[in-house]
Length: 348
Image (tube, rainbow, N blue to C red; front, side):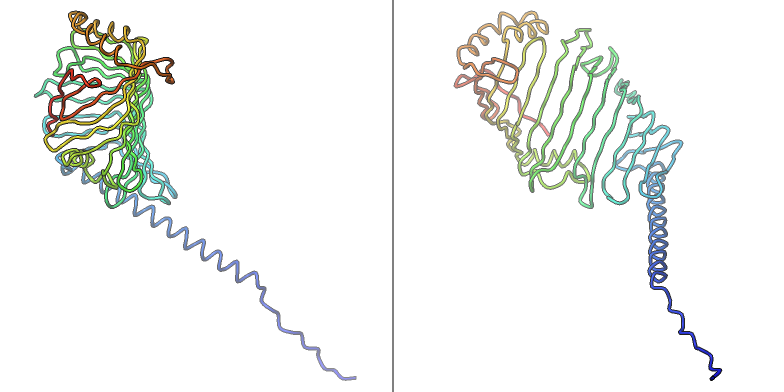
């Protein structure tokens, strides 16, 4: 009998161990990359705030007090105890701000605003206070500038003071919102709405609450709002901007007025276009005008009779109404074929 030892076959390395090692390595690299990405983003945000407070940007110096940067690892949240901005003689202060941006989808940001906002310009006698119960905004941007923007406020209250330079001493609204969004290749849609809006003049006259809704499409506007949205809009208007009015509606005092159509502005600032106007309860509108200007009732009676004669009955979402065309050519406004007023040129 041979004393040969039986040789055991060499142990085979488990296949699963290599896969686990690879997954752990990928996870470590991913976590390290995310940590580095968040650190770089937070450092850049902090540096931007430092630059804004130490040097004027667009002629405005901005300061963020009680600064905090949070949100690791997937979000970047920047909070400010108060935000102050100074530009020439104008000083503004916001009670608080929290801006949040997802790092996995760069270019978008959402912000919540803490009430109130104060604006003071002693040289112009301006002292304005804006308060709200809830305020927020959202925006997206890329290398070519701002793409879209929206903002909404609930229980808005604006106080300007009776002796201020503005014609209104107070403005209140249950809700206010606005937005600018791109459509197609070179069309932008602008929308604004206010619910239960109330206006008080410096003389103490308070108008009845009203609801306002406006939506229009700016044609040949471009694909972005740019780095200076205000200047982008002005440039579009100066070169003869054309807008499709999807809806313009005002409801107040038991009456509504709505319109849709097309308006354009030429290089001289004169407005032209065609609108289809619908209204309900014309007498309620007349009473509202009389409230604003008691001496106007007799003057507007002939105009009311003309409007009634040239209108046709229609059904609308507000109920039975009357409809009539309004034509505008180089600032001259005609009800049907009868001119009745002239719009001044728009100076930009």
